[in-house]
Length: 321
Ligand code: 8YV
Image 1 (spheres, helix red, strand yellow):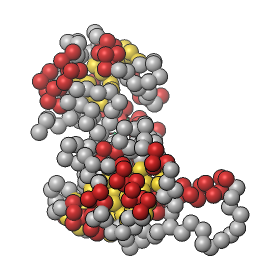
Image 2: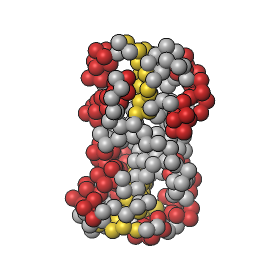
Image 3: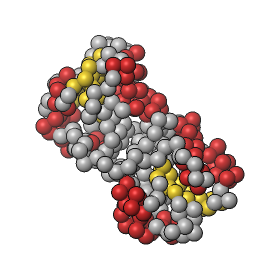
Image 4: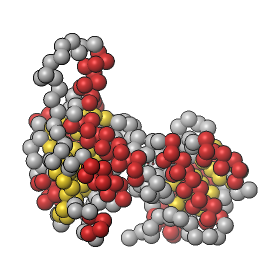
């Protein structure tokens, strides 16, 4: 059986398959491998099952043992993989698109509602025992029905967010590099520029990948384009947001509330977020359901098995631009 390095925890169903089909080498350190530890573990292995915590840069592919024939990452995001270096080394890299669309879009709606209905403050009131009166002035939030939701990045997850938000009576606007065909837009209003989208976004959902083009997309200049009192949610990557400027906007009221599942530099987050009452914060759990994590693990393994058997793999990373 081929030897597989597994760098992170997997669900019991995925582990059972690994045990059936591979000779596994598990990371038992209780933390991600350093790059050198991963390279050492890869020595003599046929395949690597990694995650976004593993940095697969040019150095990694230069030093990768020749035994390794395929790598698959347990993520849809692939900013941790240098695709040009992988291609130069002749190593196919699989990833896990699609299977996490619904789970991640669910979390976007949880953030949207959690932020707009002030769920953090409400939880605190109940749990602290300070909820003493049946006051009608308590914790007034902002309704979502009839509001405009701007979606920055109308890919698979963005469209799943749109589908859910429509059911809440929101009007969907979006910016994407290319306009979608009408059957995929389902009535959503296309904006050819991000600025135009921002100007109408009562609510803004970030759903674009992290790249040099999207880094710090949300900054002092773009936050000022939002309608005053907008609500921002992010299930994509923390790198899309310039934290200090969002925190300033949350303090000034330009942004009424933010729901964030992802953070630049996570798991260390800018402490300014935790000090604010108008943030609803989650620890990157967009894909964290048993069903989704199992589906991601199975897809990652499907990629590995296909390449090892010389068959077409279901989801390899697109070639570098
Ligand atoms: C995972 C993710 O939590 O798929 C992605 O890109 O960010 C999440 O689904 C993460 O990759 C697990 O390491």
